[in-house]
Image 1: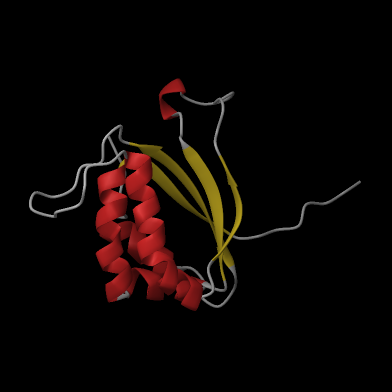
Image 2 (image 1 turned 90 degrees about the vertical axis):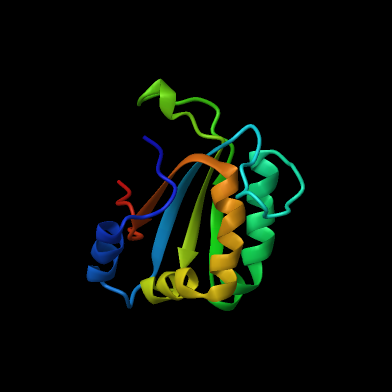
Length: 138
């Protein structure tokens, strides 16, 4: 089973959590070899990775306005613990000033238009809401 969009139940659970504190979203992405745009979209053929960069470019003005900051990104090299079929092409953590900023982003019409590129790009994904904590040092 692939996961590209949150369900209504997942969005409701997200909204039930506190909205007034910073959150970090862990993104795990697996790209399609070739992007799959809806028929008639008109996008030039490209790889999934290229379509994802189109999404980042198209959503950039909205995410900057709302205070999104990518605080870490990487190309995963190996799943050492976990299912081998959950290999990922990209991982990153996006920090939002608060959960309201995330909800405003996904409701924004310009952002929603940009998601056609994200959907075309991805074979599978995970988006995990995290609350920042400080690790105790000995």
